[in-house]
Image 1 (cartoon, one colour):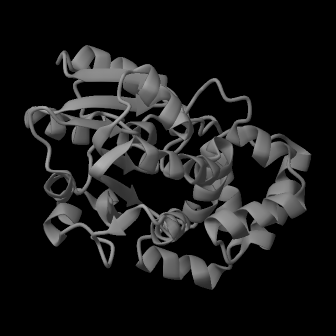
Image 2 (cartoon, helix red, strand yellow):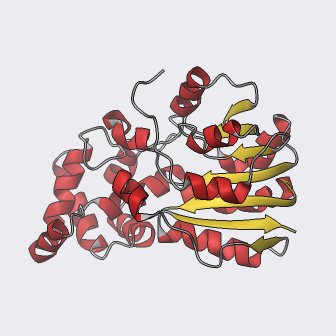
Length: 294
């Protein structure tokens, strides 16, 4: 078992309050990660199917958790209906999605997710994926890079950054996260860089987010998964989704409003408390939306 906590989950008490787990109830944790939400569900006597596309997460939980009420499956949550049926979770009382990258993935330099650690340009949540961050950074044409940074990162200086990347890779391939960060920093105007430092924001944040989203097809997978969740829920079963950026939240919000089989329970998304943000700064952008099946 890993000594360090694999992933620090967010909004656990809020999720548990809405999902109301208990003996005889079954749930799906579609992004099981280090098992934070799953552990809380199991502690209240529930049966849980934990899904994750990251083999490291599944292997960690197989070693760390031995409860008979926990069933693990490695897979993409875009296939949530198929996986649930294969594992005997055809009708469940609740489903939880904790979207985004895990603490373990960010803290593991060799995974290439973090702009704060030197590592290879990888960013694959599922290491069986063919396209890595390296392939995007070194092979995509400038126009496409600009589009990715602008669309998925909402990066104001997307064109300048794309141009700088293309110029740098003509000399030699961009191999590491640190190399990419330095290129991004130089592309951002000096005055803006000073403002970022005052706000303690890294200039590479949005670009890394955009690349990660494309590598893992995160938004497409989410759009594919959400309609399937309603088919899996029992009447009065609940769907809880935690998102971390506006693109994810917009997809979730649009789906919940459009889906006639659901009643929205959170008029506004629920965020973390000041205490939780202090204890876990990565929780600051989390938004929880919950709906109930009619």
